Length: 252
Image (cartoon, rainbow, N blue to C red; front, side, top):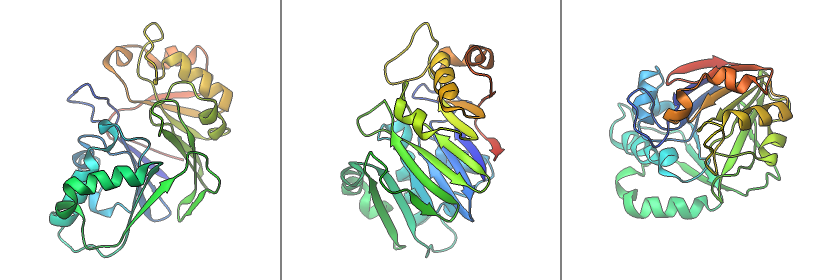
């Protein structure tokens, strides 16, 4: 399982950090989790082919996690050198179908291609994980927006969790139990927390309770980025701490 952090930033414009996007290559497929602004060009800079995307998974509907979905589909329809024939799977939390209908009402005729497209809406409680070529995908509610969920991919290489945006969440802790790597948001300092987001102390608490082996910190606002984040998180967590940057690649 190869993982690339395409976008590690937030709504605050930063030349070195695009908005949220992570690409997972597993089982011969390319999976994209969230598509914030700059994600499509970020894939190119990370030597990833946007036209090779097989599946898109959305954590919630804020623009900094979804706005480049339109850009990706627009490019697939008009910017590809070869006509696409294989299906594209779009998946997100309830009410994803209503979100998708709203997007297609505005942009549909320009961005919806002739290739097969499968749209799947996930209930907040994962009753039955999705069996993918690259492993088993499960999910759980996150504490951010009403629709927010986090994802976990279990493969023969190990388990990977992407939290999306969240504050402390028991359900995300349970989802992450024993995972090898957790790509987790770390938005603000402990001294100035913001509802719906994590601080280094919150990251340490969740990672320790879940018993994950490694955390990769993403969704970094400038105030958090200015901290010594490995040291801050390390006060309450004994595992490996990596601070994401755009283009960071790691594997399980």
